[in-house]
Length: 188
Image 1 (cartoon, rainbow, N blue to C red):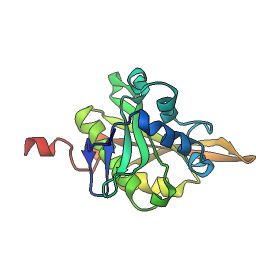
Image 2 (cartoon, helix red, strand yellow):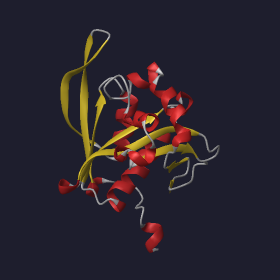
Image 3 (cartoon, rainbow, N blue to C red):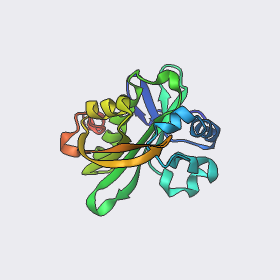
Image 4 (cartoon, rainbow, N blue to C red):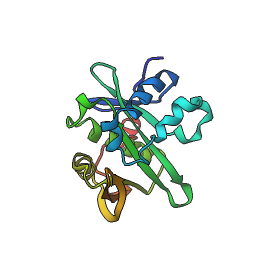
């Protein structure tokens, strides 16, 4: 199945995944450089559930989107909202640009903006949070450009090569989000 433009930006768009994306995601999960920056548990990402069970049976993947280059239609990564707490209107955000040739080119920033617009405008979240390893400065700059604020540090929470690294905790409130409203095109 081809990807389709559920949420479109200038350089990329977000499309729901399907089973044909499973092998690509699996390859990113097995790329050590991608995985070491992924602020996950160090063994697999939440997206790995895509290749472990069918999409329609995995509620965790309900708000997962593939990041697709708008010019080439190539899937370059994924992003998702997960660990949702509806009562508090809160969720966590995860993103991986799996194709390293797209690192540092603004695709992650645009994908996060699109996903946050969806989370705040469509899903009516009040806040979105994330954790990022302190050594992943590129990701921290991306999140700060979108409007995330540092809210704390989980000290020496991640062991890598016998060295303890901090995890920077960040969040953004709907009122702080500076992206284009998703619903603008519907109401104008």
